Length: 133
Image 1 (cartoon, rainbow, N blue to C red):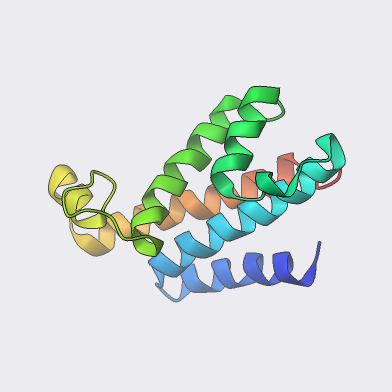
Image 2: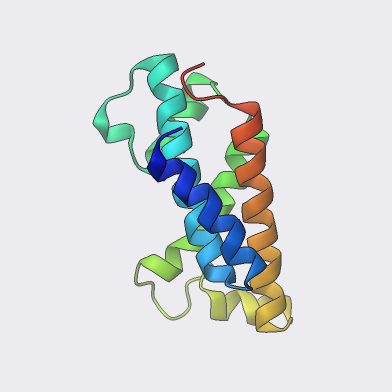
């Protein structure tokens, strides 16, 4: 595991413990992208164009390299993360504000649930998909 990946893993855990749930989500997706990129290098020698989370998910689905269950969870987490890092229109369904209204929950509770899912997925990816295997 590279220092970048190890640092992302550690920071995601600490962010969650400190109640920094958006950071947990962002770091978990970044970890997953790096981890899966290394996994693909060992499996398929992907081109650099595969090095985005969307391209990794699509490539793995096409080649059936990873279970659809994990890929679906990762794609959902990517969708949750995106409005925090990319500008989205006001009524985009994945925006945090829109999800809050749709789920009628407290803001911090929704973020905590998302962060729990992010950490769970990060751990599952690291355990079930060794890089370079």
